[in-house]
Image 1: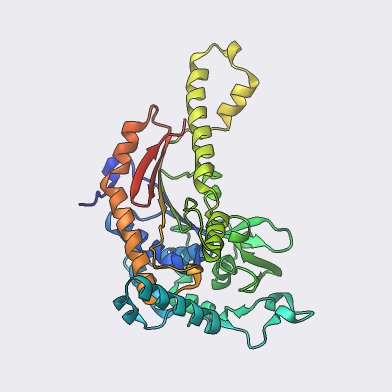
Image 2: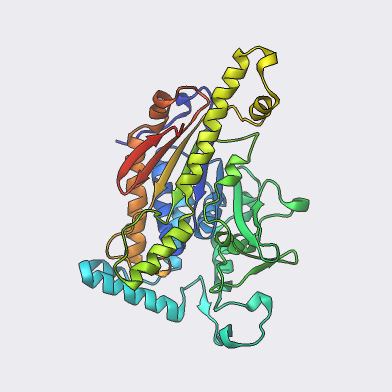
Length: 388
Protein backbone atom coordinates (compact mmCIF):
# COMPACT_ATOMS: atom_id res chain seq x y z
CA UNK A 1 0.00 0.00 0.00
CA UNK A 2 1.30 3.47 -0.91
CA UNK A 3 0.67 6.40 1.37
CA UNK A 4 -1.29 9.22 -0.24
CA UNK A 5 -0.19 12.56 1.18
CA UNK A 6 -3.30 14.71 1.16
CA UNK A 7 -3.87 18.33 2.10
CA UNK A 8 -5.35 17.02 5.33
CA UNK A 9 -1.86 15.99 6.42
CA UNK A 10 -1.18 19.72 6.95
CA UNK A 11 -3.32 22.75 7.77
CA UNK A 12 -2.95 23.88 4.16
CA UNK A 13 -2.10 22.18 0.88
CA UNK A 14 1.62 21.36 0.96
CA UNK A 15 3.81 23.04 -1.61
CA UNK A 16 5.76 20.39 -3.52
CA UNK A 17 8.98 20.82 -5.53
CA UNK A 18 10.58 18.23 -7.80
CA UNK A 19 14.31 18.46 -8.61
CA UNK A 20 15.67 16.32 -11.45
CA UNK A 21 19.37 15.64 -11.97
CA UNK A 22 20.92 15.21 -15.43
CA UNK A 23 22.06 11.84 -16.75
CA UNK A 24 20.91 11.19 -20.33
CA UNK A 25 19.16 7.86 -20.87
CA UNK A 26 19.23 7.23 -17.11
CA UNK A 27 16.47 9.85 -16.96
CA UNK A 28 13.86 7.16 -17.57
CA UNK A 29 14.18 6.74 -13.78
CA UNK A 30 12.52 10.17 -13.49
CA UNK A 31 9.47 8.83 -15.28
CA UNK A 32 8.98 6.05 -12.72
CA UNK A 33 9.43 8.44 -9.80
CA UNK A 34 6.87 10.85 -11.23
CA UNK A 35 4.42 8.01 -11.91
CA UNK A 36 4.52 6.98 -8.23
CA UNK A 37 4.18 10.61 -7.15
CA UNK A 38 1.17 11.11 -9.37
CA UNK A 39 -0.54 7.98 -8.07
CA UNK A 40 0.03 9.22 -4.52
CA UNK A 41 -1.47 12.63 -5.28
CA UNK A 42 1.87 14.44 -5.10
CA UNK A 43 1.58 16.90 -7.99
CA UNK A 44 4.49 19.36 -8.00
CA UNK A 45 4.04 23.11 -7.82
CA UNK A 46 7.63 23.66 -8.97
CA UNK A 47 9.92 21.51 -11.14
CA UNK A 48 13.63 22.23 -11.48
CA UNK A 49 15.78 20.29 -13.93
CA UNK A 50 19.11 20.10 -15.70
CA UNK A 51 19.93 18.17 -18.90
CA UNK A 52 17.57 15.19 -19.23
CA UNK A 53 16.00 16.50 -16.02
CA UNK A 54 15.13 19.70 -17.91
CA UNK A 55 13.49 17.69 -20.69
CA UNK A 56 11.44 15.74 -18.13
CA UNK A 57 10.59 18.97 -16.32
CA UNK A 58 9.35 20.58 -19.54
CA UNK A 59 7.15 17.58 -20.30
CA UNK A 60 5.64 17.70 -16.80
CA UNK A 61 5.05 21.44 -16.60
CA UNK A 62 3.99 21.70 -20.24
CA UNK A 63 1.15 19.20 -19.95
CA UNK A 64 -1.96 18.82 -17.80
CA UNK A 65 -1.75 16.31 -14.91
CA UNK A 66 -3.98 13.93 -16.90
CA UNK A 67 -1.61 13.95 -19.90
CA UNK A 68 1.81 13.97 -18.26
CA UNK A 69 2.45 10.23 -18.06
CA UNK A 70 1.18 9.76 -21.61
CA UNK A 71 3.59 12.41 -22.89
CA UNK A 72 6.52 11.04 -20.88
CA UNK A 73 5.89 7.57 -22.28
CA UNK A 74 5.54 8.97 -25.78
CA UNK A 75 8.80 10.90 -25.38
CA UNK A 76 10.82 7.80 -24.47
CA UNK A 77 9.16 5.79 -27.23
CA UNK A 78 9.98 8.43 -29.83
CA UNK A 79 13.66 8.79 -28.91
CA UNK A 80 14.32 5.03 -28.94
CA UNK A 81 14.08 2.28 -31.55
CA UNK A 82 11.77 -0.78 -31.19
CA UNK A 83 14.25 -3.25 -29.71
CA UNK A 84 12.02 -4.56 -26.90
CA UNK A 85 13.13 -8.10 -27.78
CA UNK A 86 16.39 -7.40 -25.93
CA UNK A 87 14.51 -8.03 -22.68
CA UNK A 88 14.72 -11.76 -23.49
CA UNK A 89 18.46 -11.70 -22.71
CA UNK A 90 19.88 -12.01 -19.21
CA UNK A 91 23.27 -11.79 -17.55
CA UNK A 92 26.25 -11.43 -19.87
CA UNK A 93 24.08 -11.78 -22.99
CA UNK A 94 22.01 -8.81 -21.84
CA UNK A 95 25.17 -6.83 -21.13
CA UNK A 96 26.38 -7.53 -24.69
CA UNK A 97 22.99 -6.39 -26.02
CA UNK A 98 23.30 -3.15 -24.05
CA UNK A 99 26.84 -2.67 -25.35
CA UNK A 100 25.64 -3.05 -28.94
CA UNK A 101 22.82 -0.60 -28.25
CA UNK A 102 25.36 1.93 -26.97
CA UNK A 103 27.59 1.38 -30.00
CA UNK A 104 24.64 1.93 -32.32
CA UNK A 105 23.82 5.19 -30.57
CA UNK A 106 27.39 6.43 -30.82
CA UNK A 107 27.46 5.65 -34.54
CA UNK A 108 24.01 6.81 -35.64
CA UNK A 109 22.50 8.93 -32.83
CA UNK A 110 18.94 8.60 -31.53
CA UNK A 111 15.70 9.13 -33.47
CA UNK A 112 13.97 12.45 -32.76
CA UNK A 113 16.90 13.47 -30.54
CA UNK A 114 20.20 13.86 -32.40
CA UNK A 115 22.31 12.63 -35.30
CA UNK A 116 26.04 12.75 -35.89
CA UNK A 117 27.30 15.54 -38.13
CA UNK A 118 28.45 14.26 -41.55
CA UNK A 119 31.74 16.06 -41.02
CA UNK A 120 33.19 15.65 -37.54
CA UNK A 121 34.52 19.10 -36.54
CA UNK A 122 37.08 17.69 -34.09
CA UNK A 123 40.00 18.13 -36.47
CA UNK A 124 38.86 21.33 -38.18
CA UNK A 125 40.82 24.52 -37.39
CA UNK A 126 37.63 26.61 -37.10
CA UNK A 127 33.90 26.02 -36.75
CA UNK A 128 31.09 28.49 -35.99
CA UNK A 129 30.41 28.43 -32.21
CA UNK A 130 26.83 27.25 -32.76
CA UNK A 131 28.14 24.21 -34.65
CA UNK A 132 31.06 23.30 -32.38
CA UNK A 133 29.86 19.79 -31.56
CA UNK A 134 29.97 16.22 -32.81
CA UNK A 135 26.17 15.92 -32.98
CA UNK A 136 23.24 17.94 -34.26
CA UNK A 137 20.32 18.12 -31.79
CA UNK A 138 17.82 19.96 -33.99
CA UNK A 139 15.47 16.92 -34.06
CA UNK A 140 14.83 17.41 -30.33
CA UNK A 141 13.40 20.88 -30.98
CA UNK A 142 10.70 19.31 -33.13
CA UNK A 143 10.11 16.60 -30.50
CA UNK A 144 9.64 19.15 -27.73
CA UNK A 145 7.36 21.34 -29.83
CA UNK A 146 5.24 18.29 -30.55
CA UNK A 147 4.98 16.99 -26.97
CA UNK A 148 5.03 20.17 -24.84
CA UNK A 149 2.19 22.69 -24.62
CA UNK A 150 4.22 25.90 -24.30
CA UNK A 151 1.14 28.07 -23.82
CA UNK A 152 0.31 26.04 -20.71
CA UNK A 153 3.95 25.96 -19.60
CA UNK A 154 4.28 29.75 -19.78
CA UNK A 155 1.17 30.43 -17.72
CA UNK A 156 3.34 29.71 -14.68
CA UNK A 157 0.68 27.64 -12.91
CA UNK A 158 3.51 25.22 -12.17
CA UNK A 159 6.89 26.89 -11.83
CA UNK A 160 9.69 25.66 -14.09
CA UNK A 161 13.42 26.30 -13.54
CA UNK A 162 15.96 25.12 -16.15
CA UNK A 163 19.65 25.15 -15.26
CA UNK A 164 22.06 26.24 -18.02
CA UNK A 165 25.72 27.21 -18.29
CA UNK A 166 26.41 30.61 -19.81
CA UNK A 167 29.25 29.81 -22.23
CA UNK A 168 31.13 33.13 -21.98
CA UNK A 169 30.97 33.63 -18.21
CA UNK A 170 30.89 29.98 -17.13
CA UNK A 171 28.09 30.79 -14.67
CA UNK A 172 25.16 28.54 -13.81
CA UNK A 173 21.98 30.43 -14.69
CA UNK A 174 18.29 29.49 -14.68
CA UNK A 175 15.56 30.06 -17.21
CA UNK A 176 12.33 30.37 -15.24
CA UNK A 177 8.76 30.59 -16.51
CA UNK A 178 7.85 32.99 -13.68
CA UNK A 179 10.71 35.45 -14.10
CA UNK A 180 11.92 35.60 -17.70
CA UNK A 181 13.51 38.93 -18.67
CA UNK A 182 11.10 41.27 -20.47
CA UNK A 183 8.38 38.68 -20.06
CA UNK A 184 9.78 36.52 -22.87
CA UNK A 185 8.28 33.01 -22.88
CA UNK A 186 10.11 29.73 -22.41
CA UNK A 187 10.56 27.95 -25.74
CA UNK A 188 11.85 24.58 -26.85
CA UNK A 189 15.37 25.97 -27.29
CA UNK A 190 15.49 27.01 -23.60
CA UNK A 191 14.82 23.40 -22.61
CA UNK A 192 17.30 22.04 -25.15
CA UNK A 193 19.98 24.47 -23.95
CA UNK A 194 19.87 22.83 -20.52
CA UNK A 195 20.59 19.47 -22.18
CA UNK A 196 23.36 20.60 -24.55
CA UNK A 197 26.38 18.87 -23.02
CA UNK A 198 29.62 19.57 -24.94
CA UNK A 199 31.43 18.43 -26.95
CA UNK A 200 28.73 16.00 -28.07
CA UNK A 201 25.94 18.57 -28.29
CA UNK A 202 26.17 22.15 -29.57
CA UNK A 203 25.51 25.25 -27.49
CA UNK A 204 22.12 26.89 -28.02
CA UNK A 205 21.97 30.58 -28.83
CA UNK A 206 19.18 32.44 -27.05
CA UNK A 207 18.80 36.23 -27.31
CA UNK A 208 22.33 36.49 -28.69
CA UNK A 209 24.04 34.42 -25.98
CA UNK A 210 25.27 30.82 -26.08
CA UNK A 211 24.32 28.27 -23.41
CA UNK A 212 25.50 24.75 -22.59
CA UNK A 213 24.15 22.04 -20.33
CA UNK A 214 23.87 23.22 -16.72
CA UNK A 215 25.72 20.04 -15.74
CA UNK A 216 28.96 21.70 -16.84
CA UNK A 217 28.74 23.62 -13.54
CA UNK A 218 26.32 21.65 -11.34
CA UNK A 219 24.26 18.63 -12.29
CA UNK A 220 21.67 18.87 -9.49
CA UNK A 221 19.60 22.09 -9.59
CA UNK A 222 18.67 22.14 -5.91
CA UNK A 223 20.17 25.50 -4.91
CA UNK A 224 17.50 27.43 -6.80
CA UNK A 225 14.95 25.91 -4.40
CA UNK A 226 16.80 26.95 -1.25
CA UNK A 227 17.45 30.46 -2.55
CA UNK A 228 13.69 31.00 -2.65
CA UNK A 229 12.51 32.98 0.36
CA UNK A 230 8.81 33.54 -0.29
CA UNK A 231 7.50 30.22 -1.57
CA UNK A 232 9.88 27.57 -0.28
CA UNK A 233 8.20 24.14 -0.55
CA UNK A 234 7.00 21.93 2.28
CA UNK A 235 8.02 18.75 0.43
CA UNK A 236 11.03 18.46 -1.88
CA UNK A 237 11.55 15.38 -4.07
CA UNK A 238 15.17 15.26 -5.20
CA UNK A 239 16.06 12.64 -7.83
CA UNK A 240 19.69 11.74 -8.61
CA UNK A 241 20.81 9.56 -11.51
CA UNK A 242 24.46 9.13 -10.52
CA UNK A 243 25.26 7.20 -7.37
CA UNK A 244 28.17 8.91 -5.64
CA UNK A 245 28.88 5.77 -3.63
CA UNK A 246 30.42 2.78 -5.43
CA UNK A 247 32.83 -0.12 -5.41
CA UNK A 248 36.58 0.02 -6.07
CA UNK A 249 36.97 -0.32 -9.86
CA UNK A 250 38.69 -3.46 -11.17
CA UNK A 251 38.96 -2.52 -14.86
CA UNK A 252 39.65 0.58 -16.91
CA UNK A 253 36.01 0.65 -18.00
CA UNK A 254 34.97 0.56 -14.35
CA UNK A 255 37.40 3.41 -13.64
CA UNK A 256 35.73 5.55 -16.33
CA UNK A 257 32.26 4.87 -14.94
CA UNK A 258 33.36 5.52 -11.36
CA UNK A 259 34.92 8.85 -12.31
CA UNK A 260 31.76 9.82 -14.19
CA UNK A 261 29.58 8.96 -11.19
CA UNK A 262 31.77 11.06 -8.90
CA UNK A 263 31.93 13.97 -11.36
CA UNK A 264 28.21 14.16 -12.06
CA UNK A 265 27.01 12.90 -8.68
CA UNK A 266 27.55 16.46 -7.47
CA UNK A 267 28.17 15.46 -3.84
CA UNK A 268 24.49 16.23 -3.33
CA UNK A 269 24.17 14.48 0.02
CA UNK A 270 27.09 16.40 1.56
CA UNK A 271 25.58 19.60 0.11
CA UNK A 272 22.25 18.72 1.69
CA UNK A 273 23.94 18.04 5.02
CA UNK A 274 25.39 21.54 4.99
CA UNK A 275 22.13 23.24 3.98
CA UNK A 276 19.96 21.25 6.37
CA UNK A 277 22.25 21.47 9.38
CA UNK A 278 22.65 25.23 8.83
CA UNK A 279 18.87 25.65 8.60
CA UNK A 280 18.17 23.53 11.68
CA UNK A 281 20.83 25.25 13.78
CA UNK A 282 19.42 28.66 12.85
CA UNK A 283 15.96 27.39 13.81
CA UNK A 284 17.15 26.66 17.35
CA UNK A 285 19.20 29.86 17.46
CA UNK A 286 16.02 31.82 16.69
CA UNK A 287 14.31 30.18 19.66
CA UNK A 288 17.29 30.90 21.87
CA UNK A 289 17.32 34.58 20.83
CA UNK A 290 13.61 34.85 21.63
CA UNK A 291 14.31 33.67 25.17
CA UNK A 292 17.41 35.78 25.80
CA UNK A 293 17.29 39.37 27.04
CA UNK A 294 17.81 41.79 24.12
CA UNK A 295 21.14 42.94 25.48
CA UNK A 296 22.56 39.41 25.24
CA UNK A 297 21.68 38.92 21.55
CA UNK A 298 24.78 39.82 19.54
CA UNK A 299 24.76 41.38 16.06
CA UNK A 300 26.04 38.12 14.59
CA UNK A 301 23.24 36.17 16.24
CA UNK A 302 20.66 38.71 15.07
CA UNK A 303 21.96 38.55 11.49
CA UNK A 304 21.84 34.75 11.51
CA UNK A 305 18.24 34.87 12.71
CA UNK A 306 17.20 37.50 10.14
CA UNK A 307 18.61 35.39 7.28
CA UNK A 308 16.72 32.33 8.47
CA UNK A 309 13.51 31.17 6.77
CA UNK A 310 11.29 29.69 9.49
CA UNK A 311 9.67 26.86 7.55
CA UNK A 312 10.02 23.11 7.99
CA UNK A 313 10.49 20.76 5.06
CA UNK A 314 10.68 17.06 4.24
CA UNK A 315 13.19 16.13 1.53
CA UNK A 316 12.72 12.83 -0.30
CA UNK A 317 16.15 12.05 -1.76
CA UNK A 318 16.18 9.20 -4.30
CA UNK A 319 19.35 7.85 -5.94
CA UNK A 320 19.26 5.58 -9.00
CA UNK A 321 21.23 2.34 -8.64
CA UNK A 322 22.27 0.71 -11.94
CA UNK A 323 21.71 -3.00 -12.55
CA UNK A 324 24.82 -5.20 -13.13
CA UNK A 325 23.97 -5.56 -16.84
CA UNK A 326 24.32 -1.81 -17.39
CA UNK A 327 27.46 -0.77 -19.27
CA UNK A 328 29.91 2.10 -19.00
CA UNK A 329 28.29 5.01 -20.79
CA UNK A 330 24.75 3.96 -19.88
CA UNK A 331 23.65 7.58 -20.09
CA UNK A 332 23.87 7.11 -23.89
CA UNK A 333 22.32 3.61 -23.92
CA UNK A 334 18.70 4.10 -24.99
CA UNK A 335 17.52 0.52 -25.53
CA UNK A 336 13.86 0.09 -24.64
CA UNK A 337 14.54 -2.77 -22.18
CA UNK A 338 16.93 -0.50 -20.26
CA UNK A 339 14.46 2.39 -20.39
CA UNK A 340 11.74 0.10 -18.98
CA UNK A 341 14.00 -1.17 -16.18
CA UNK A 342 15.05 2.33 -15.16
CA UNK A 343 11.44 3.46 -15.10
CA UNK A 344 10.48 0.45 -12.97
CA UNK A 345 13.36 1.18 -10.59
CA UNK A 346 12.19 4.79 -10.10
CA UNK A 347 8.61 3.67 -9.53
CA UNK A 348 9.66 0.99 -7.03
CA UNK A 349 12.00 3.30 -5.09
CA UNK A 350 9.42 6.06 -4.81
CA UNK A 351 6.65 3.70 -3.74
CA UNK A 352 8.90 2.18 -1.08
CA UNK A 353 9.74 5.63 0.25
CA UNK A 354 6.10 6.72 0.35
CA UNK A 355 5.06 3.55 2.18
CA UNK A 356 7.02 4.87 5.18
CA UNK A 357 4.78 8.00 5.22
CA UNK A 358 7.70 10.47 5.21
CA UNK A 359 5.56 13.39 6.40
CA UNK A 360 4.59 11.51 9.56
CA UNK A 361 8.14 10.20 10.07
CA UNK A 362 9.48 13.73 9.69
CA UNK A 363 6.97 15.02 12.22
CA UNK A 364 8.17 12.43 14.73
CA UNK A 365 11.87 13.12 14.11
CA UNK A 366 11.71 16.89 14.41
CA UNK A 367 12.72 18.56 17.64
CA UNK A 368 11.15 21.74 16.26
CA UNK A 369 8.39 22.12 13.62
CA UNK A 370 10.62 24.37 11.48
CA UNK A 371 13.39 21.79 11.06
CA UNK A 372 14.23 20.08 7.75
CA UNK A 373 14.35 16.27 7.63
CA UNK A 374 15.97 14.28 4.79
CA UNK A 375 14.58 10.84 3.84
CA UNK A 376 17.15 9.11 1.60
CA UNK A 377 16.50 6.07 -0.61
CA UNK A 378 19.75 4.53 -1.83
CA UNK A 379 20.20 0.95 -3.10
CA UNK A 380 16.96 -0.14 -1.46
CA UNK A 381 17.85 1.29 1.95
CA UNK A 382 15.91 4.18 3.51
CA UNK A 383 17.52 6.43 6.10
CA UNK A 384 16.19 9.61 7.75
CA UNK A 385 18.36 12.46 9.07
CA UNK A 386 18.09 15.83 10.78
CA UNK A 387 21.82 16.50 10.25
CA UNK A 388 22.30 18.44 13.48
